Image (tube, rainbow, N blue to C red; front, side, top):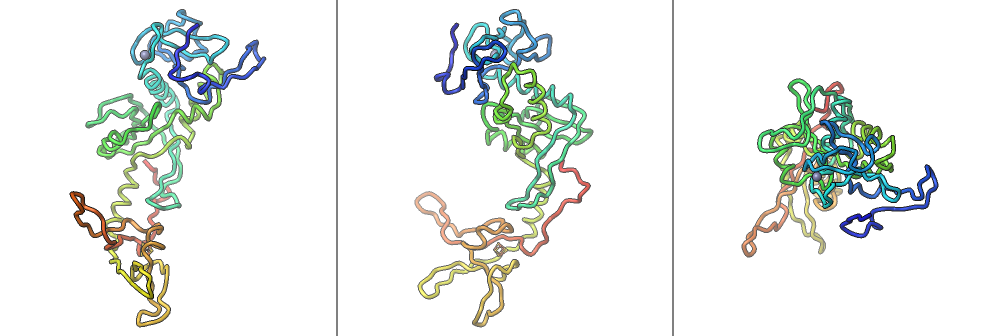
Length: 328
Ligand code: SF4
Ligand SMILES: [Zn+2]
């Protein structure tokens, strides 16, 4: 039998002698799911364990609608392949999108990771379980097509299922423009962490549990409430000028009146007053929003020269969301 791999299969498959269930070899598929784990039949996704072997499976590819064969041999992990051979660019991606829709439609809830403000270690919102009523797949919204839209009454959340690559920056930007919270779920690390074969009876359940309740493979692409809080902080932040100081052969950049009292003058006419050193304190300070530089055109490019001011919110209390508020 012929198998086509983009590179040597030895790189992807970890084959071990394993006598269980009459199989000569146990194939570990925790490296990367290159093959289709699901096929489409009668409008429903079927896993490789639910169908007969070969062409009798009666499934088609969810992306290109070409007939599939169920490969349930002894040597390689069970999977679907296109009858006519060759690779299908979107088969795995579309299958996982549809599977995710099926899982979320059934579960009607999703655990979302905590939300942190810029440079903060205390979460604005803790991890939460969010409930919704409706799921839409690849629905046009503004200028973008998010993979899934989860709806609960007037509230909406976008879900991007990363399969072959993370969400491209251009698409992430378009999703941000919509002003709706968007979450990315990275399926490949999730499938790897399950450490199960496609033909394992627990694969479907474990995948569903990981998608709904797992947090490690999820990250916020955009969060409306976080953005609002950060925008308010930006409006209320103080602009503190940076002053160059040359003392006893050493150059330093000083920010006067540091609200966090990072350092204090020990002598001189400023004795007792607080200050901060730009490179040692402000650059690593969790309350620093940005450092602005004076610009100069060098050649044809505007190039930052000297630090001019620091925008910081050290004088403001740490924002806290009300305990009862949902993160979406
Ligand atoms: S950014 Fe931090 S260290 Fe710098 S002045 Fe503001 S509070 Fe102080
Ligand atoms: Zn296909």
